[in-house]
Image 1: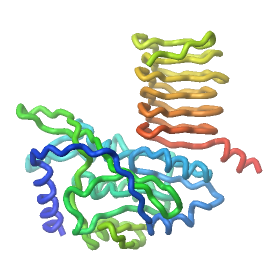
Image 2: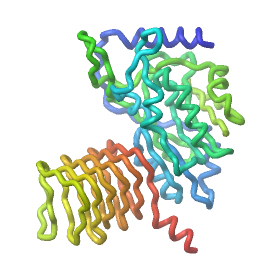
Image 3: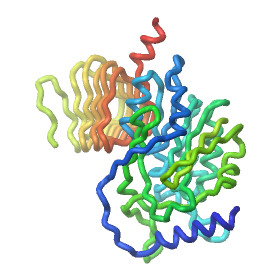
Image 4: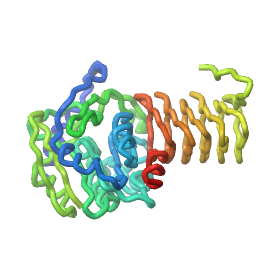
Length: 239
Length: 119
């Protein structure tokens, strides 16, 4: 598993380290039907207020969607949080990685809440490798037993430049996708100093195959895959 | 952007730093730094574009254009403008969030929940 993943990572990271100057495009909005969201939508009519965690960029549409139905929504943008320069450290081999302990000390802290639903969107595909497993472990612990998590994974046909999107819920099974244009990026400069730069969007870090995804969610009770036409698999897992 | 002018509006300018408990019976515009707590029961708080508030806030209406860190309780309405950066839980009856605003925390529309519970 590791070798395939690492090969993809090398491929993608290799292409992202080039000095190509891409012109930032204006935020594009597309819509797509989401089978995973449709499956979740049975919960939205619940009389009991649900506790929903949205891990994408702050979305007024999603906040409106859930609060109109009397549910509580928590919003936390983990991709942006992962670009904090103070997270950068070195592993035992001297490779630059992100410090998952620091990351989890600052994020996903919910002592007073457990969630019925976590909307992960495409987070695992764009999150730094060193954070993926620790974050999924923390998400397991903040979900209620029987709680559900929705995540999207690119297929191997997706290219390394597949854009990262924000997801806005338009209807029970329809999402509006808005391309993320800007990001903060921690970079090591020529003198070795780390500085923050603004770059064009987040880059796809890897492509998980089905077995990788099953391994990633091995602590969960069940997993369901939905195939889509746009090189994306939707995955709904139940704790 | 300049602060809205009103006879019943107190203003904290962008060079002002306040630490402690802040309470009042008039609307408040904060464009400076406030750390502690803010209580304006029947009045509104506006955090201006240069404002940096690190406090629990209780007011009738709250408009955020700058940074606010702390839990927010509004008896009427919360507005997060596009430049808003809010870290904390929001409890309110109504909320509007402009595209581009950043929120890390909970949104709890208390009016609906209370009505449902009261039925």
